[in-house]
Amino acid sequence: MIIAHIHVWDQKNKGDLGIVLAVQEQLRAAYPGVRITDFPVEVLKIFDRRQALAINRADLAVVGGGGIFYRYFLPFSKEMIKAIRVPLVIYGVGYIREIGAPALRKEEYAGIISLVRRARLVGVRENYTKKFLTERGIPASKIKVIGDPALSLKEIKPGRIKPGFKLGLNLNYSGWLGFGKWEKDIIKAYRETAEFFQDKHGARVYYLKHHPDEDAIYPRLKIKNLEVIDLEPAKQKGFYGTLDLVIGMMLHSCVLAAGALTPEINVAYDLRNRNFARFIGCPELAVELADLKSGTLLRRAKAAVKNRAVYRRQFALVQKRAARASSELLRQAPRLMK
Image (cartoon, rainbow, N blue to C red; front, side, top):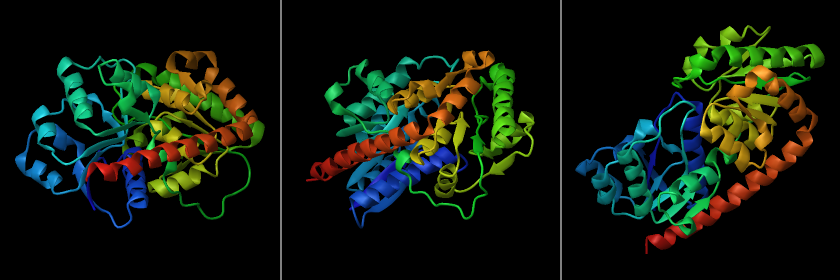
């Protein structure tokens, strides 16, 4: 069996890379002996006969997961989508719209809908993406909510870790144009929270690096003894599992934390952040940018630590539910090839 995997190609972004690795782990588990050929998601933007032929040499095309429905990758070419003749599966994808970003244009919506209509199976990562599609005419029965594939990314545990309370932080500084507007509020809230846990719990504080552009921002936190963690995705997730709390902005800092059963607070710079919190059944774990000035981040962080055992159990249930939904969708795919 050969699968053409069409996915985000950003090797610098730990979240994007983690999604690709997780999807391919799941494909190999579902179809032992499968051979996977990789294609960048940009292949969907322009009709290219040679690329279409290469995809059609596979038995199955899988698009996703991750934020495939994102202005940066749009519009998709209807001609290219039509040229993909092998059965097509959309797997663990999501809709991205950052705070302050304009709505998609008509042709961008049209490309997404064309791709979804062409797909034989559709699995999205949360209910908001499902709603986004159904409001544009896709039958709800066609769309399965399977969660973010990176929740189940295999993790490699680190060696010996020093005892004591451990707090992880992450910022998004890799292309979101709205960061400058909120920078003072974000930095102040992060510093206030880190200093509280250092003073009250003797916390070791780690910066969880997900993109090289973050080198320009985390020094501005001015947090005493801040240590930077920058590992390949499976090891990064393993490190997340050693922490007591994660405060993240990059969506996959929170996805990897939840997948490692570590309580996390999600600073919502994008619709997908708050919708991930809803997907895991914990909307209180998302903090809106407008609420940072009021001390909400610190209050939510204190509550998350107090209730960390509850959150660990909840995250374990979510992970099992997502794994089951993903497995059920993948079990249907071989029937499409007959």
